[in-house]
Image (tube, rainbow, N blue to C red):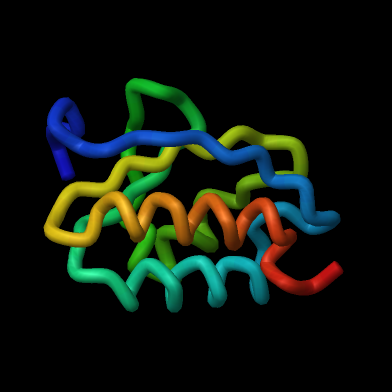
Amino acid sequence: MADTDDALKGTAELINAVGLHARPSVKFTQLAKSFLSTIEFSLQADGPWIDAKSPAKVMRARVPKGAVLHLAARGPDAEEALAAMQALIAARFGEE
């Protein structure tokens, strides 16, 4: 998504022990893929944006514990997608 001006946006702090590492990345991308909307994240409010549905791109980001993810969703279920992504992160990906 090159332009996120019209996207719904939110933030979430990674509080799980390993950050956005292997298993959390898989859960992150699987959840993102369950929505029709485009979902992206960034470590900065103005990007660069990373496709949340791409396991390779999510893993390559190497997001550590304590980082704040800026989330952007655009599409028919964007509001639900954004809330679900934030809930997954807040729940520590169900691992702790």
